[in-house]
Length: 593
Image (tube, rainbow, N blue to C red; front, side):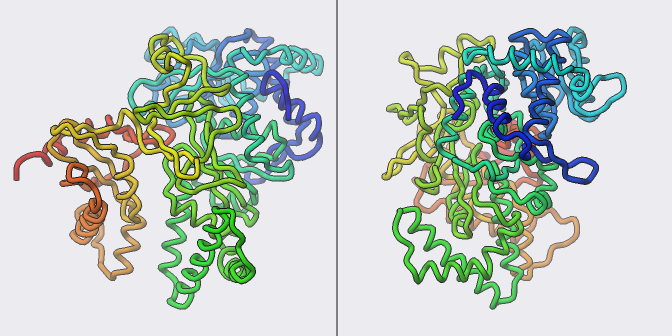
């Protein structure tokens, strides 16, 4: 394991060992291309040398506004190698959000991917004339702008040698990146992370994940998010080949084309696969449907024994192999055929989904972390896992639970400060140095961490009762009918809910029951859909205290989206923004009837 002071020096050590082996794969002009480790290193050093020659000084910031692609990773590493600080911007962010980051981070340079994102960037710059003076480079050719490839080609071998010598002097204490939080509760805040933070995270991940250098990892999450970024650096330092997915929309094709061994994913990606399997099973003739049901039952029995570290037994092992031959292997082929691990985080993953994947032969290593801890703080390891939890603390990470139930973390991965916000930085830590995560948690009986909610999301009713919304929302959202289920009721007499539908799940259930749908009829208005959702709510209310039960709800016509302002770029719900957006409709629920 590398003991280098910074992540780029650690990458170069790996590149020196891996040499002509494949480092990255990417699609260009409809065909998959490969760069080996030596080529990748030379590309990054070339870009870094040119950035330094044209004026990037040590500690200066460079904003990076692009989709997940090879160019993103090369530019990120080049900025760090030149002693700069990468400031990622989510590609889904609007001009207002981009403008805020530009003004707050005060970058010396900017790198934008293509014409589409350039238009958003220019819209941001137009709001403040001072921003127009920031030198701009692009990843793809655009008239009048120099590309990062141009900079790479301008560097000489001497330039590369000089930058390699220079970067080894970058210490672990120096700032590597400023990552802006996704804004579930309001203003975007810049989280300042050092090279030491990044290195501590990657070293801990290497102890837990232990993927071989022959393993291929598919990169598809936004690299502006710490989860995707952590995997980028993990693969570059561990020595695994990294494949860049074309897009989320083409992920199904890319699985088959690239045949990855592991993928870093958010829960929604796994939920989609799970839902598609359910729809596929419903469409089968009865004998085949029974075969799938039998196979999954066998897989789940095996999974339960493995979770408890108990022997599977010869008879169950033989039946699982038969189930694998008849069904599981076919499913895994749709994911490339070699996939054995999903690394999952960023939001809540229903336990039944993790159990489903394990039943078919794919382990889901669910974890928990924040921007402030540079991704994972806890994770389920390949030989010690408990589905429905987020695992145990990573090596070097300390975790405790306050008397109020809040998770507190300290260790070498924890951030330095919020940029320009000393008071918020101070209040983010306890007097004895623990970082306040803002998340509520508990230990399972076997010592794993379970997230139970957000401190700020607690709803206090007019009667003074405290309601934690997430556990209730998770129960309700388990129905294939529901996409999002959001509790409201702060200061009100009772709890209400805003519901968005899972259109595929709804249509599948209606087809199965032989219920026709009229053209252009909103699903939310269909009497049978309203009745089915009412049943979901009634079942979900069972076992809840009277003050926790959902008394009234609204089924919305449109899903929650990033563009609509209901979701953050990392797909978390903006609870406050949603309740404000639908305040008038919610007000109607509380009128006397």
